[in-house]
Length: 339
Image 1: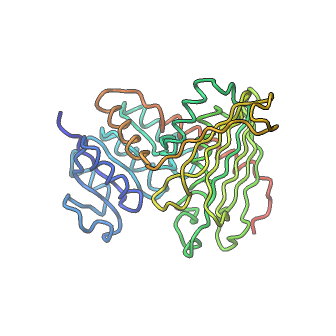
Image 2: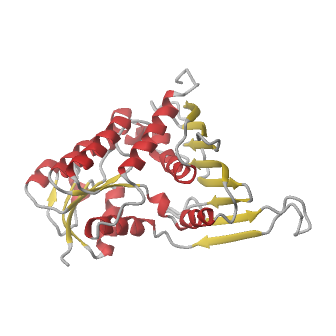
Image 3: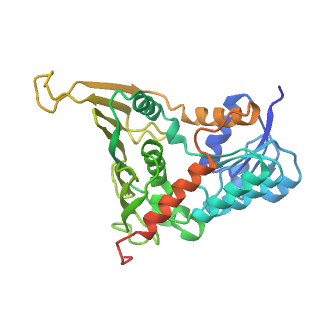
């Protein structure tokens, strides 16, 4: 079978990651790349464009991979779908819920595949956790606690991610969205949201540097979220408490290696003190030394196009659900004064 001709629009950090992933896959031919910054287009041997509309008009592609600023994603995605392309779009799915709904409707109208890049679902620790939960070895989920934080950087106050007109929000929309997507993945939709969204330390930015939320499902499961740009030591931790034990995801393999090792540990409830100590059940830990999430994610996109395999993750519904939850967290903010 011939390779799928694909264009990568947006060749910043994420565009380069997706470009490399497409090259490794073997089922794609990168027929063009596009970026508004000419310096991001140097050194590539395929046709390059600085205008995405001209790029789409002058070529015939099978698929597009969109890795632009948040405010540009919806227009590009909807246009590409309307032109008959399958689309893989970077997260977040636009600046707000309306953007996500608009893209979902465009995908439904076109009949083409639209997948969003929520790669955390494809991390090996998350895959193991989902398998463990589905096995029911630990019983039913009752609650979860998620902390995802980073320190910002020396240029944090000038980054586009903290410019609301471009990004749509701050740390919650940029990074916390991944943890929210995982909470939705494991616990299901949330019917109740209580939140505080604040600027605690980075007072020179117009967006939030911290978000706290208590979430509850209609069947009584409870989750808490802390999304932070004031976690001066980078941290990823997700605890999932079940009726017969609990799971801890600690650390995450990333390109920077700043989130430490990627571990999953689970414990089964032991009220008989088989280990001889109260509250100290046997520990089972797996450690991973490779991040295969980018490859797994693109494999699913490719299979959906070529074999009509249903998308399991990063679907338009997933995008709408997480953006609806983010809208509720912003709207439910109890922190009335912006510092």
